[in-house]
Length: 376
Image (cartoon, rainbow, N blue to C red; front, side):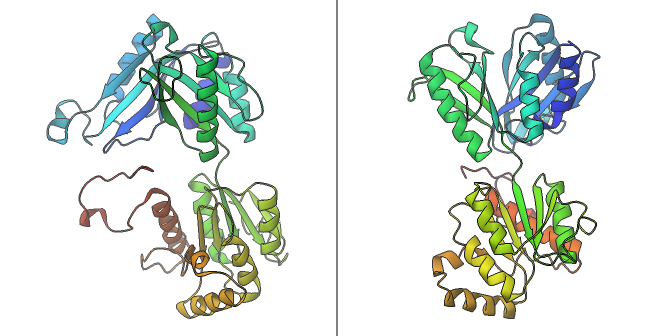
């Protein structure tokens, strides 16, 4: 939804109705993740994608029907790999797509949600997509960490269960379909609720204002991270040298990282790259980074000799073997990279593989599913 939100908001502000198809669950080799959305605008235009082109035509037609009837629908697309070409889902995966009409009447809170997303404030949208009672379908609640939902999904029990779980998804930054009994029973079946978790963008902290840092910042920004470049040397840490960074900070790296952790701005999605390969910066910084309770990735640049020296220095200041095991050094996957841009790709490839459980091997050498999930 995030990628099509500007277009959806523009039509909503004009009082127009839009057909919205959203992937709410996937199995096997489905090409788009939960939360991917496609719009069918009032002018008949299509914006976004739910399958990379496989079933967009079918979703488009269903969205047009929903625009006319106003009745939302949950559709499943996908067959086995053997006959996938027969229906167009060539990847062989399975998608559940929730198709609904969105306008000022059906989603009056959209403007506030869009403002939260634009400001980087965490907000979740929970929608009932399956229930034994058709009147529950399409009910929606907007959930924020600091307030109770203003709209009930159907009962206090449902509201409490969905709010707790939606806040958990928001903390992780993951969209998900949650299952309950018809009245929010934790172990029941019959009701499914899709949660869009509009968490602030994940952070990438790049320490060391060198040429490689500019390339890493550029790739991080492209991947959707909020990028900070930090260096203690003001002559190098300038916005003109790092135009792709969201912020450039002049401070001692370890001191800045300690302050960010104390302020609660480091989480399990945060990527930390240490590019200085200078012990006076690296060792205090990595001593802090490797002891963070939550962080997605910590990588440090340098030769194997630099890595061995760095590890020895870290042991001398009391960093444990378990903490050292969290360090990716020398940083990046073995791509044969030479230039700063190629090195940035190798670093990004490594933390993407870490996030999704990828092996880093060529897909041609592997068998089985292409796409990994957090549950794999």
